[in-house]
Length: 136
Image 1: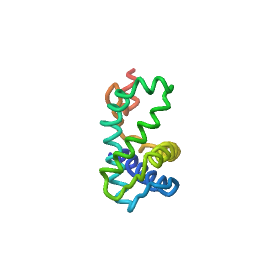
Image 2: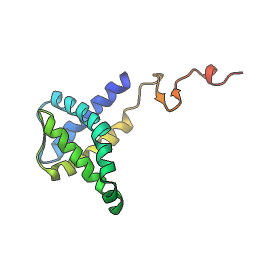
Image 3: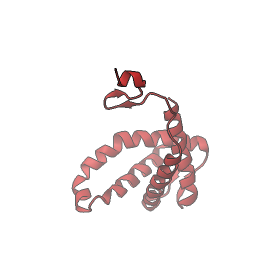
Image 4: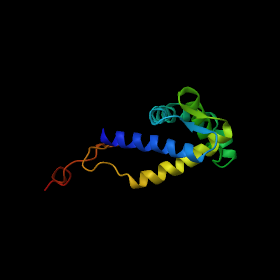
């Protein structure tokens, strides 16, 4: 749970910072950024994979560069459904998605997960005590 909160705050802060840099993107309050961060997470989990599959031929032809457009469309969709988070046009969304990915990545490098908290991985819970993972 603490890792989710940290990730959520990083995403909301990244949205606020990105709105200062990108013309045409506006976040009216931190509460709007927090809501937009949740909606963006849901859109990236549900809508974006569908867009990636539907646009796969174009993405292959452009050697993956069309994924920037998919990210921009996802960001513009979030701006359309989230009150207080405004994405002016597709160019603002395109520049915003690029800046947001850099800002989130940079901040994510400095903010580490909470130590000793269980992490769910492909093999179940990854934080077993040393004695449990190395039986003698």
